[in-house]
Image (cartoon, rainbow, N blue to C red; front, side, top):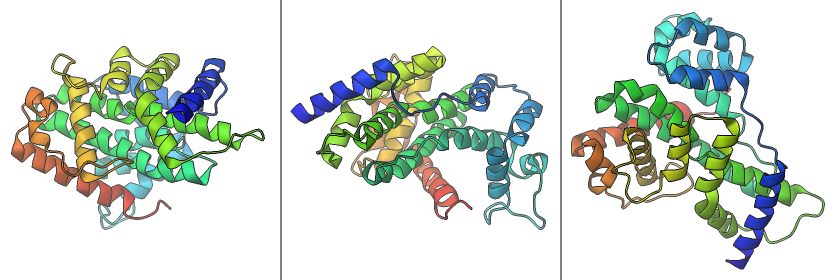
Length: 285
């Protein structure tokens, strides 16, 4: 624990000084997040944002032309991709593509955590949106997706700062997987909340980031319960850094609060497994 406290002190010093490599949020990510709060957002604006970014356009077209969705002809425009995939799916692809570029580290040990962390982030985002739709909270569907994307941003921040510390010429020794996991477990909610405030995220997302591991969320509101239940479903399936295969979702406070019964929870697990197959079974080209 002394090692953990010492490293956490170094992290705090760098964060306080703004001395870390996590980039500021892009203009496109910020505008998409704002649009997510409006259930009647203008798809024309989303099309414009995507079409002006090569990485976003490429990812949308890649998915639209993948084996799971491809039709008789190739899709060549964002508008055509929306017809094939649906506007909500395209919107989410754009959001997650904006965030994905940050999930890289120079240290091989730390970089090995980035892919499972990213898969967990995307799983929780889609799972929370799926629950919102399935349980009758359609007005929260897009907000739940963004909340899922943001819920573990504190882990991303901490890995980035640790990467900077141990990549410096005067880097200390002794970086271990155990030490990193201790730091992530103990500090990601508070550091993530501080980052969300610095980014100017709406307070509802800040609460999700800070409180999603709280034991009693019965009074926390629907959004945080959606994200927290999706988070536990991903842990149940081992999607991410941590795995809890013995977790029984039906007895969680979140399931009780949301009224998610056994059938819905079983369908959620299937949906998350299908998502893994769709997004992560083959490399992005």
